[in-house]
Amino acid sequence: MRTNRQILFSVIVGWIVGVAVQANDLRTYRNATLVESGANDGDSFIVQAGDQTLHLRLYFVDSPETHSFRDYDARRIQEQARYFGLDDPQRVIWLGRQAADFTKVMLSRPFTVHTAHAKALGGRSSNRIYGFVVTSTGRDLGELLVENGLARSFGVKRTDYRGDPIAEVEARLSDIEAGAMLSRRGIWQESNPEKLAEYRAQQRAEARALNQLMSATTRLRAEPLDINRASPSELNSIPGIGPVTASRIIKARPFTSVDDLRTVQGIGDATLEKIRPFIRIASPTNG
View 1 (cartoon, one colour):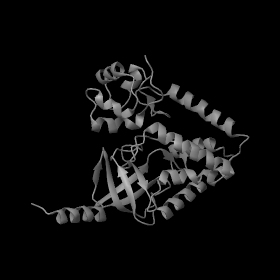
View 2: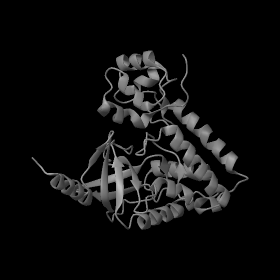
View 3: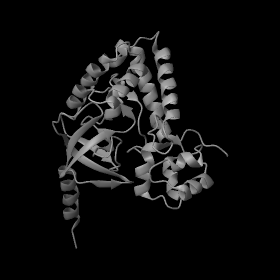
View 4: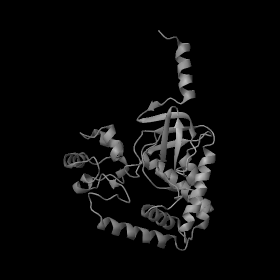
């Protein structure tokens, strides 16, 4: 039988070397380190977590792009420029590099990673996974990026490592973003307040037109589906959801959290993580 001293020693060693610890469905890696890579940017970067090399993509936040190699990159840059009210979309890349430099500094000392190893959007060849990062000073990296005007509250969401529900995290980030905007920090110092509403309206109009043109079974939506309001065909368009499961989801509505989908027959942890990037909860309905 192991003594209390041996047990304590094992716990301490596990913490030091960064062994993953289960916390709900999130695994925690302590003392992770940043890996130098040309693929790193403000919200996506490679880390060494114990004996694993992980390519992380932060939940909840979106930093400006740092390059434009493909049509997809150009569309993202245009969309980000309009969101931030920038007259010149080329400034997005420069500001994205500022965000990447900021993240590099924030992660220059060992930090903590929380991840469920859910695959991040980015195509079949992408090996990125979603996660949360807490810096050596105990601050959430996503919140720091938004606070300094180097990211917006936008992206895939889930209950966080503190147990805070999506709505609470969104509200907190929205307040932080408003503070950065009013203080004109980071990207907001280049924002054109007189054009902001116009640019965002343009982007919404283009997104609606694009969604109408693309097939419901193949499109990658600008916004995740609200599972409390989505039609059977919309639910069926989500990778991993078929007609039977879509019917079960509709019968089980309303949901108060995406995690409530675990109560639906046929949706386990693996399936939930697969579909999480495509779904959200807006406001529960009675129908």
